Image 1 (cartoon, helix red, strand yellow):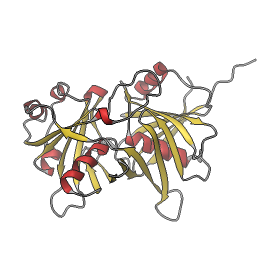
Image 2 (cartoon, rainbow, N blue to C red):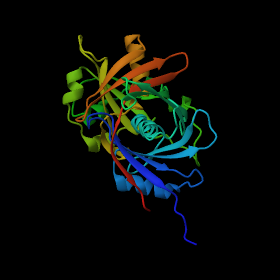
Image 3 (cartoon, rainbow, N blue to C red):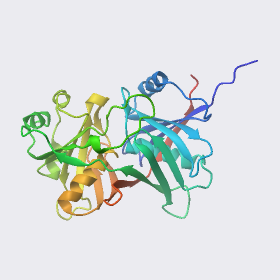
Image 4 (cartoon, rainbow, N blue to C red):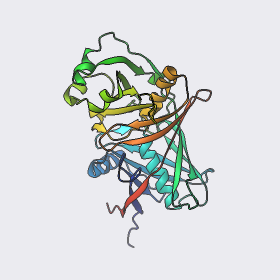
Length: 303
């Protein structure tokens, strides 16, 4: 009798207009077939995209729920916004949850929820709102910020913050858990132009604390945005990320304290660029990120 191989499919997604963060969503359509970590990491390395996510449906759940894991080409992430957006988009676009407008993900960061909202009369165009945990920020533990200035090619630094990863309650899906994308350093520059124009020194960023460095500044008066940011994570295989959703889980906390507000329009100032709508729910300590994606490629994995 011939052996029946489990069916595995792949969607490649971009947020919109071939801008923003490209991601690949990989589905195993048989819930009893879970690939081992070596296969997952090898497949992510083969795709060599900023993020590759893997999903397995969890039967009998309401709302519909999927196991979700995120990988760069070199490491597993503990949280990722745009790969979650890509996953939700693929699920809704391929009618994997029927008529439901809500899908849940079981992840290393707990249960994450994505909701679909029609942007116009047709279901072919829709927004997705993701519900993520806030990543709180605190004062940087050292007064010496020269290491960051060198990494940012001499840019003028007005503030440095780090994240409180010890306050996040994560239940690892497998084995011992190590923070990756929640271990962040936020470096605030003097102006919007400084964030856009500076040339990073990746070798020096590798020497800085934290797994990810977020560089940010407030928007100038009259701008449609509230703040901009760029993200660098060479330790995780991403010299500069195009648009990082999870970075805004900490940026929402930081700028809420500075601006005394909870709703933001954020601009990702990478070469590909991107825009995010961000809401910080102080009472529930959650961050809502809203965006949309398009599918540009479909295929099947044969190994």
